[in-house]
Length: 188
Image (cartoon, rainbow, N blue to C red):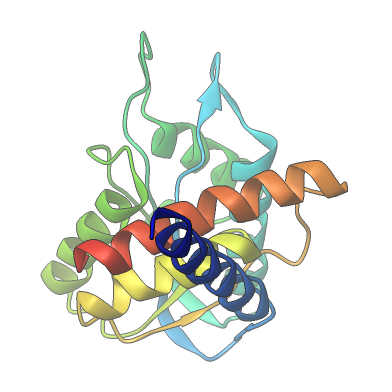
């Protein structure tokens, strides 16, 4: 009986991994009010390579006039004096994005918090549509959260990723599958 339950759970996990992988190819450049850039951390005041790719995607969307504003998410890590979103804002300013087009939130630490805080910002500013910007393998879980919060959104994953070789991709897929499956099992 225990082996049967294990096989069922493993099969469900593998199925969800397949769903996440297939969803990672969904890409939109639909005109939207805002690009929501999901945080990915900084280190000693520098953007992580993953976060930088996400920010570059929002830069692309803004410069192509696909979005009018950019919401940068990410709070304070351990011993950080600046929020991740503040460091990301500096990067966008250096790359020519006007201050008036950049909105930051400094409270969130996790994906669900990134999206909840972005929803509050959108509601307070009357922004009605969004492109969610993250890594391709992170999109399914992110979109599920955003849709649950009734955000009118489309996925716009990074065109490039820092997960280039097999094992980092496998680790990322396993991580996303675990949290996506956990969310489905707990109803979140």
